[in-house]
Figure (cartoon, rainbow, N blue to C red):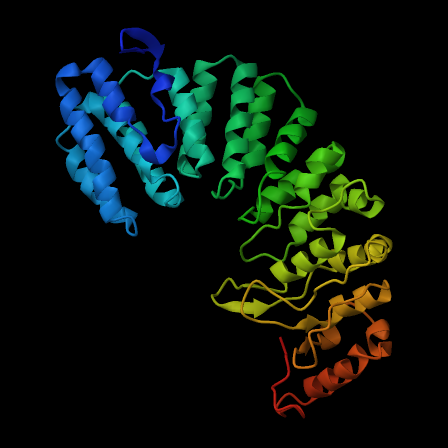
Length: 408
């Protein structure tokens, strides 16, 4: 890889200085590169840079239309201009979702490869980090970037750069790759590190992910690694805030928290979730009581048994906080109590928000994991359980309140 420099206002600077600093949406990378490397085309490049802004303003609700317009412009450009043009298009698209900016990023890298163009390693690394922070690096480019780091840096530096790249990716809206552990392990071993370093990087990356898809396969691979090499409390504090989205029940993530000691850190108060432990319990119910189903649509699902056990373990901490747990809301339209969750809370002496008798309750029947003794004995929720059980046994009957029972 050859290292190129740009001459700007008579100064020799590294090409990574061409990256936007005042916001990617105002990027002038292509125009700046042309001014330094193809002065005869500088005016055209500036006009094209301005045209990007105007076109995106016209089609900001349809970034695909903007990309189509830019593809037409790209056909008229010399090959050496294409990476810089497409990177600038991608910069402008950061914030419009991962796919549009990712298409531009991929087009820039494809142009470099197809035309055998020289690449400045510092620019490529800084540019990839910018796209990663914006969630606009396509998953298929992950492996290519890791290989690029290995080819242009010493093993220890490449491993550190990969960790920074993955952390930026995790902090963005983009979903994490399912094979992250395998890739981090390969990088660490090349740099002469063992599984303790792999666990450190994986834990740090996962700890900054927030409410986005984190594949169960990734969590299942990370769980034994983090259990063998537990994270610091600072990293554990991030891990308890992940709340993966998608068609999951939170079980793989919860088992990771339990195995690595993050759940115990909540129990002992070394780690206090954002908003308090009562908010964490309520958020878990909110996220996973209903979920997208593999066949389409949304359906109720039983929460992981580990969660019911953890509610009991968190009881002393929750009672000490004194704030009630909200256990009837979901991230979808539906509302309702899960009888098992409600019983676990009441058995632990935890106060639960009562939204009123119009909010239904799900009784799992033979699939229940709790004996429901605490729930049945509660003066407020006990009678509602009784009505729910009767409705469950007579599923074709309306309840006395004119509602169909919540039967999963």
